[in-house]
Length: 214
Length: 251
Image: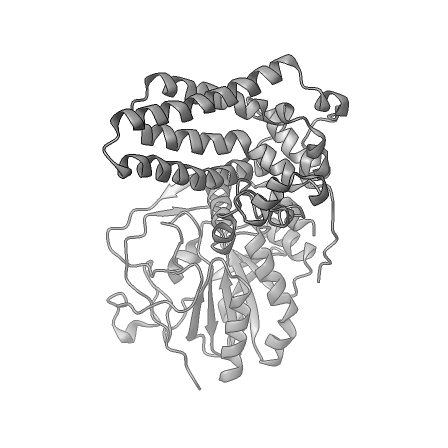
C-alpha cells in the first residue's frame, strides 16, 4: 500500500478555539505546543514531533491524542443528521474519509460538501465511505444534508471533543476551526492527512488521488 | 447539483425598508445642504493641498522635501483603495436600514445591488455630500493644526479617496460613451476604478471586488480570501452571518 508521508509542524501554542458559531469564544491557552500548524492553502503539513506517546500505545486514547499518519484513530460515537448514534467502528473493514469542517451553511463547507457529494460515486467505487464532522447539532446537519442532497453521513461533534482529540488544528490563531481530512484504512489506521481551510474542493481531489494510489 | 440561478436582487432586499427609495428628480438636483457639504469638502481638500505646498516650500531643504509628501500622498491613495474595500465589505454584509448612523448608507448600498445604474443619474453633490461632510470634519482641524506636510498629504489623499470614491464608483457604472475622455483614460490606465473591474462585483453573492478607488487591492484580497477569513472569524466569534452567505446559499 502506497503511503503519502505527511508531517505536521510544531509551532506556536494554540491560543484560541471557538466552541460553536453561536457560543461565546472560549479561550484555551496551551503552553505546550501540541497542535500542528495548518496552512490556509493546504498542501502538506510540515513535520513534527509527535506527542510523547510510546508506539505501543497507539490504541490508547488520551485527551491530547493526535491522529497522524500511521496512528490508530481514536474511536468515537456521535449522532448523525437523523439523530442516530454512529460509531467509527461501524466503518471498520473499509477505508473511510473523515473530514472535519468548520460549520454547516458556510460557503467553504458548502462547496466542500457538494464536492464530496458530486464525487461520492468515485469514493464508493474506491470502496471508501465519507463522513463529515462539525460542531453543529443534528438538526443543522439534517437541514444542510437535505438542502444539498448529501448522500453521506454528517456527525455532530458538539463541544468539538472529537476535533480536539484528533488534534485538528485551528486556523487564524485559533479563531477558526480547522478544515482537515483524514483517510483511514480498513483497520482504522490513518493513512493520509490533508489540511486546507480556503480551498475546500481540494480535499476531494487529494483524497481521491490517494485512494486511487493504494 | 444545485443549479446556479442568477438573481438580480440579493437577500438584503428583505432587510431594507419598503419605502420608495428612489426619487430621481431629487437626485439630479441636490439640496442646498448637499451642495454646501460638497463645496466644503472640496474646499477643505484644496486648503490641504495649498497648506502642504506652503509648508514644503517654507521648509524646503532640497528635493527630498518635495518627494516625501508626494510619496505620502501616493501611500494615502493606495491605502484609500483598501479602506473603501473594507468599508464596502462591511456595509454590504452587515447591519440593516435600521442600524444607527449607517442605516441609510446600508440601505443605499443594497438598493444599488438591485439597481446598479441608478447611481449614474445622481448629481455629483448628491453622490458625494456624505463623504464630503466626513472629510471636512476630519481634515479641517488638520488644516489648522497640522504642521507636518507628509501627514497632511497622507490624510488628504487617504480621506480624499473616501470622499470621491462614490463618484469613481458612479463612473464605473457609466457607459464609456457618456464619460469624459479623461475619465476613460484614467479608467483604462487603472488609476481610477475600471468599469470591468467593478462589474465583477455585481453578481450574486456580491462577495468580491469590493475596492472602489482604483481596485488595485481586489486581486490580492480575493486571491487570499481575506474577506472570507474575516467573515468566518466574525461568524465564529459573534455568530453573525454576512449577507453574501445568504446569497451564496441561495444559488
